Each structure stands twice: as structure tokens, then as C-alpha cells.
Image 1 (tube, rainbow, N blue to C red):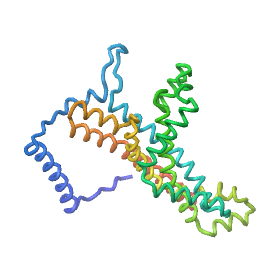
Image 2: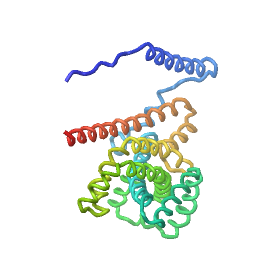
Image 3: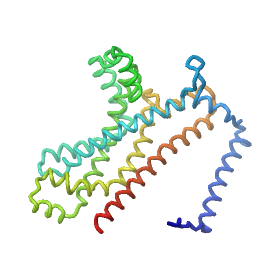
Image 4: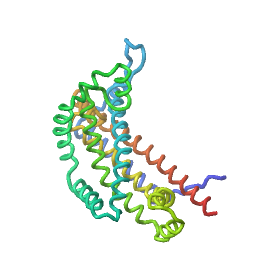
Amino acid sequence: MSKKKIPITLLDLLIIGGILGIIAFIGYRTTAVVHYKWNWSVIPQYLFRYDPQQERWVTNLLMQGFIMTVKLSIWSTLLSLIVGTVMGLARISSRLFYRMIARTYVEMIRNTPPLVLIFIFYFFFSDQIMTVLGVEDYMRSLSPAAQSFLSFFCAPPGQCSAFFSAVITLVLYEGAYMTEIIRAGIESIERGQWEASASSGLTWRQQMRFVILPQATRRVLPPVAGQLISTIKDSAIVSVVSIQELTFQGLELMAATYRTFEVWLTITLMYFILTFACSLVMRRLEIAFQIEETMATV
């Protein structure tokens, strides 16, 4: 199959020229007007460093923050999808009580600033509840193998309380938007699909499992992809409670090196790599679903 050539129009050239002009202008202002001395040589050593004791290269501040951002995003996305699916089903339930619970959750979370939620869960959940339950003491009492497993998938034992409170906050916040996405996806399924599956003798659960949800999944994939990217970007807000993710490490590094522009441009590039990779993966999934749907209708 021959690849389709994408024509470059005059408008494309004007946009590219405009972007290059803006970059050149910012570079000129920072160098000639602000008298900023660029020094990119300091950045690589904060991505990876050679550890003489281990005799190998290990991750440094920026990569450690990048990995923590990935962990936060994965846990928050998976759990918010579960919360969104449960609440989405409650939103379309025939029982008024379930609809009221789901509606209250969505409206309360969506109309509360995420920064407020972060502080509420950090000071009440992490500082009070998890301290009373002795979660961190229990984590420190685990075997070295269990602690390594916990550090790899979540956070070191000393940071678990803050990590869990950050994940719960992001799950509740993103779950409210996921709820509306799932609800809209289910309600977009044509009435005939419900009637046809009901006439086949399927129960409500079987209708959802075999007929409605598979079709709704294809339709909600693009907005879910957008919400996934939003979760990655929103994870930066937990830096205010000292979660050592990418933005927090960038602030620490900027205060230590005074390399403001180099640090923030590097962080911007790392966020872009992460979100753009997610966009490509979700786009591939969307195309795979479209091909499967086309093959099924032939």
C-alpha cells in the first residue's frame, strides 16, 4: 500500500514561520535583553548519573520525578476508570437513590478546586487517618523484597501515605469527569439496541456486558484519551504536598542551580513525550476498534 502524501500549503508554511519567529524572539529577549546565560550542560547529569558504589548508571532527580509522574498517572487513570464506570452506571440507574449519589458526587467534585481537594486529603487522610491506622509503620515493617516491590509500583515506604492521598485525590477528581464520559457513552447507544437485546431474553447485566458496553467503549475512547492526558498534566498539582513527581523535582532543581529556562524547558519536553506517547497509543486503539467494527459489519 502506497503512503498518502500530505501536501504542504502556504498556510502551513506561514504557521511554521510564525512559530520559528516566536522562538527566535523569545531567545533574543532572554539573551540580549534579560542577559540570561544559557547553560544546557547542567541538565544531563540530573537525568542520569554514574553511581561508583553500584558501578552503573542510575536515574537522577528529573528521571525519578518522571517515573513518579508515570506511576501517579497509571494508578489514577486505572482507578478513575473504575470509579467512573460504577458512577456512570449509577447515573443511568432506574433507582433514584443511586442516581442521587452519583449526581451529588459529580457535582460536588466538579465544582471544587482540585487544590482544595489536595490539601483536604493530604492533611485529613494522610496526616490523620493513615497515621492512626499505622500504615507507614506497617510499610516499614515489611520484608526488603516487599518494600522493593512497593517502591517499584508505588512509592518508598516513607512516602506511601502522601502517595496514596495524592492518588485518591486524583482518582476522585478525574473520576467525576470519567463518570460523565461513561454516562454519555452509554446513553448514546440507540434505543433499538436495548430493545433488540431485551427481546433476546438478556437480563440487564447481560445487556450491559454483551451489547451496550462494548459499543459504548468504542465511542468513549477519544474523550477517555483526552482525560488520560489531562490526568498526566493534573498530576503536577500534587507537588504542593511534596510528592516528588516531575514538577516538584524541577522546582527543587531550579532552586539549586538557578537554571530556570533550561529546567522548565526540559520538564515541558518530558511531559510532552509522555502525553504524546499516550495520544499515539490511544489513536492506535481507536483505529483498531474502527477496523474491527468495519469487519463485523461486512
